[in-house]
Length: 66
Image (cartoon, rainbow, N blue to C red; front, side, top):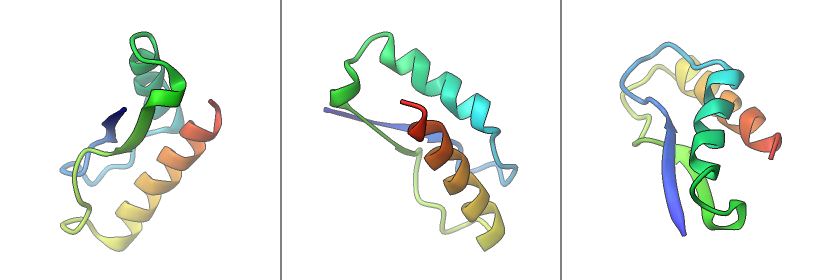
């Protein structure tokens, strides 16, 4: 199993779903889908609630494509 951070928790700007999907696709080139867990690269405690929510939504939407 590999847990990989695919959203940046330092930058408050939310990633696009396409950007997150692209990161996931790169990871899947080297690891089977059933062995990959996608997550944020760290905790979102330092982000404003709206930024954390937007990043989480992008992560969920991107992961749903796989």
